[in-house]
Length: 158
Image 1 (cartoon, rainbow, N blue to C red):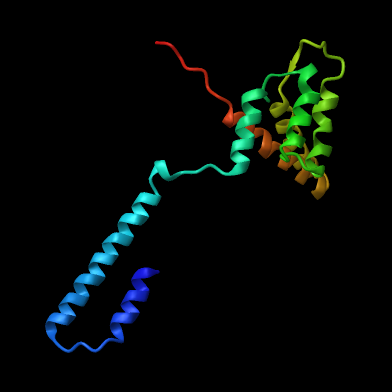
Image 2 (image 1 turned 60 degrees about the vertical axis):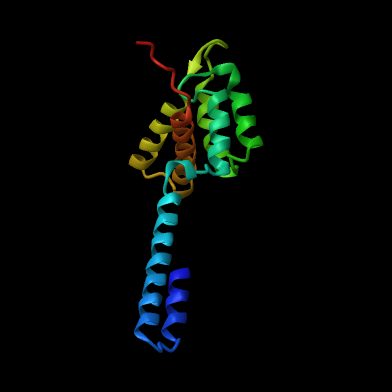
């Protein structure tokens, strides 16, 4: 943007001598190099700033494992998702699938919430469920997939 503004300015200036034209070209090249360097710097990994949602997902993922969620922590998991604004009304309806899956299990058992929602997503697509049901499950599947991928990985000792 700065380069185009400078180029526009220079085009409307009167070039009285050839040396002024050469100086103008040198100035444009110098600014072009600065803009290129700035673009390269902004693409560097050090310039990455995670979104607020990514930070919240990471916080929940560090507290809960959606692939091995203890049955007695499902309520706390749901409350944390709602507290951080990661679970809206539509996805909350789909979370009922996880809540019903824990029926009949002992308090110390674990459930794979991501697996349950993944299976439901596949079945809803195959069975031709309504658009709103597929959307609810799809939103929850995306959230759970993000939570699973944000989970800290245990370092292997070699």
